Image (cartoon, rainbow, N blue to C red; front, side):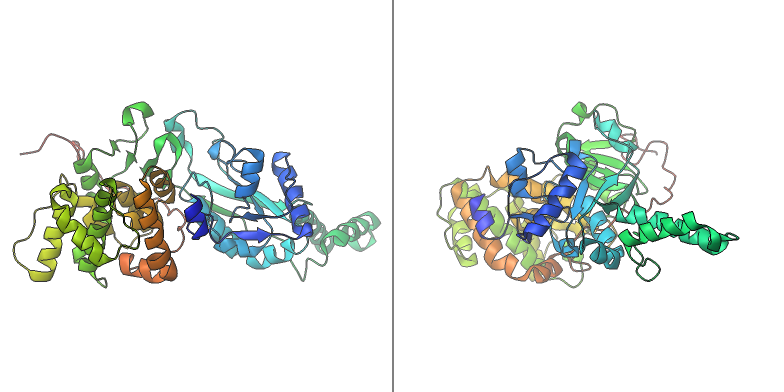
Length: 450
């Protein structure tokens, strides 16, 4: 992983904390949330205030995310809003934190000028002892205050000011006035500079979680289902009609089509579909060539084409299917048959324009793992896990490619791949629509009506 860190592909865009004042504020917040503190004098933090250096010091990668369920956070500056989220266990967490900071930026700027803001993404589940408990998570509420309780103090002062303005003879209530003066010494003039954070909550209907081997939950779609990257038998009974595992390709494809979540790349507007498919073919060639011991140092696209010719007998069906599709897109001719049973099928899709496009692209990335660029962009935890298992030749090629061809123009690459939105962060979970009636046999039933 050292190569990825050096090239800014891991732990990139974190916020440095080097000032003794900020370190002291961080420790006060850390004690407030966890009862622990750091002895480090400088470190880096993500959007939630989690630091890889402190995680290493404490020997706890989830020191701000107990049991991986209720994410805690520490804000030292509003600049954290552009940082990534480390050790993410839910796909919606970063989007929620970003929207909370954006929605309270002026207030948070004032609060963090004097103290750290500590908070939590609260739901009703505190430990996931079974996969079924995931479905008890409905609404995520954001709770936050400074370590000194400035927001709570301002709320008490606001209530006293309201009494002072509305109650008869409040002008003569010396105790009330004394209390207002005492609280105002802590908060300042809240009538001119309100210290109030907007109450924010988010419905979590469609999401990915790292728990139970990786699980996608789609409840806010007309035909709900769960999709696991592990063994669905190990999940036990779930309170959802359908659960598919990674190998059930036809059923997953049917789910995506029924809910209108995907579109073929060759039919998408505003992108160079043939170029995207050719790049995916290059990634597949690099995967096979590295496994055969080829040196990919500095390999160009021309080099990869030469390797494809040399090892054509070893290239998998994914490559041949994409090659047929590129031939059709560029030269016309017979339409290639690439159905859901074909290994190349999920490589040919991308998410449609809808609020959960990032989540669907993440799922597609895990279902087409040789596309290393989409895996890195959309499913970083899966990318890092795969990277650790790759041969050295492939690790070197992938790190070089991402650093030289993707990282130099992230927005442009995303626009070229995903076109309609090219999002840089996760959206909040959408509100749950009313589901359409489903036939009694179910959309994936084995029995057909005549």
